Image (cartoon, rainbow, N blue to C red; front, side):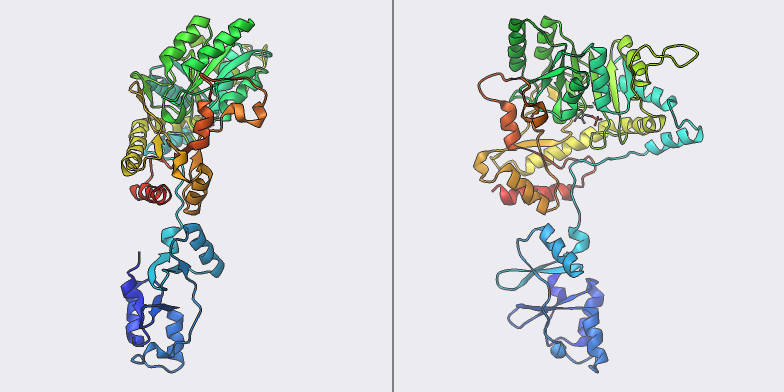
Length: 488
Ligand SMILES: *Cc1c(COP(=O)(O)O)cnc(C)c1O
């Protein structure tokens, strides 16, 4: 921020003084202000040089400066508008003026041209060492010691017996469903409030998704809605082949009632814990409750391998099968022989090296994300139209993304608020659009607990705020101040 008092000169100011001020402030421009304090024009190095070349002495005043239409912007304009103005006129500074034509601030491109992103990769200190080791030993591909170690280390971290490192979380869900025997004509229950990658693999397998609503208390799958779906299925004489329980935004679903329902009907759970690595449910790691658990290391997740996933299970056969299917399903024969259709879904030794380094800082990343959430909650505690994603007492959430709803009483829609934030170069996102509302899943069945759909309401009102573990606190402050401005 530039000190406006130092930048302000008048027609009476000497050329010497003006040059000295330019030198002192380093802003590259001065503000010529009239006797009434009103802004007249900007004065640059070049303007002063031209006065000198036209014969003015160092002790002469700025009286000779010709009038000029300088670019200014009105107070209250967004960062985006200010940047557009700067870009259009090829300038790096822009005086902000109020209703009385007084300069209140000078915007500096360097300071305002910073985008606050939702969630960005955050590398630790050792990823590079593991990757360099892979280069040094030429373990570039296909598999190698980093893959084995990453599987072992992740399994140990979450308390699962076995793990298979794969090319993505989506690949892990796909293999998981396939291993659970999901095939043509089967049905699979799946949380409706989730990312499409939870449900797409159901269709890859030729099966049909049936969507289940969220619970208000966790935003994840409602045990009541699941019960209704099971009852309806039983009455119609069928059962789903599997249930995909998703744990959103760093928080586990309420596993106990969901598991006891699935046990009662004898249907296995595939836990989509892509967003909840590092979270716990009643003290145990999210992702280790289902027969199969899935994590993602996509670029925006809490830790990343730039792209990757992991399938975990306590069943050694399940994980062995995942490894086999992920490497083209090769039979143990001296030649290339296949008795099953396989996939190319294995993680590379290079990326596993990144994963090993990331795993070492997972706890710190969880801490930081929780701190970001706590800062938002504290700073916005007096704004009643914001409701944070609840964290039940059985949950230890990573707050991978700080998620909230904005009630209708705010007088601004979620979409309008998102546009305002975007104009301030702040990336916010709506909550996932429920799967039962997706055009591609039109016609799929959907079960709620009661008469209204919780997921629909969460989607209408929900917002994810920038939450990166590497987010500086002044960025949190910036998000807070823009929210305060529009949610008074
Ligand atoms: C990210 C994500 C996935 C997919 O993981 P990828 O590694 O990107 O394939 C699946 N489900 C949920 C809920 C996710 O957020």
